Length: 206
Image 1 (cartoon, rainbow, N blue to C red):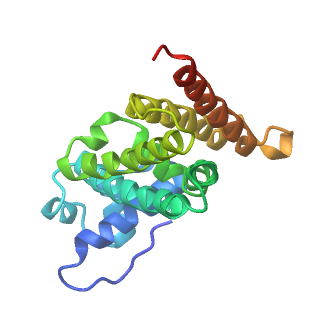
Image 2: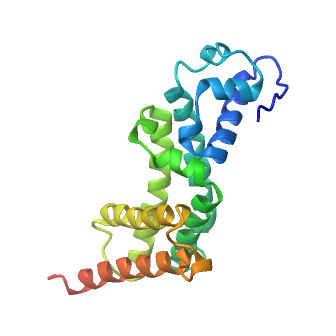
Image 3: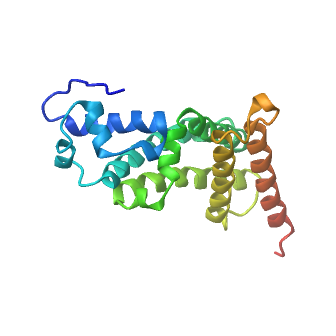
């Protein structure tokens, strides 16, 4: 259904982004086009080109905003490592999963293609989210008396775990109603990953 909304002069770009977010939420990234966004806003098919040269440019902006929100959600869940790094990390993993499940279309658009990170702004927003995971890994290693060497690689492994569980969840393969709750799946996998890394550090030759 086409929803025509009023927008103030000069705010067409923002209205198009909002329309794109709605379209993605309803039908996933494949449903997004400049034509459909224009219809949703109630402007001509040519109007979006004043702000976006292509669908990909609009998708890049959507991804940038998605990663900013994603990073904020992770920061909030991490809460500066309170009350301790381990507790905060498991809480952050749950926050990661909650974001993906709350915004499945947006999450899919953010991670669907590396092309969504083709602009410096969107790439920086994605890097910020990874840096939060990296800092949490460093904090947990330090809490356990393990060296932080290799923490970035470990953060990437943690991200891969979280992303895999998130995608299985939003695609319906992991569903608590079917006895396959993604929350404990991710929690156990993340704990096993970190414990294995700490054990390796403890047994490594000095």
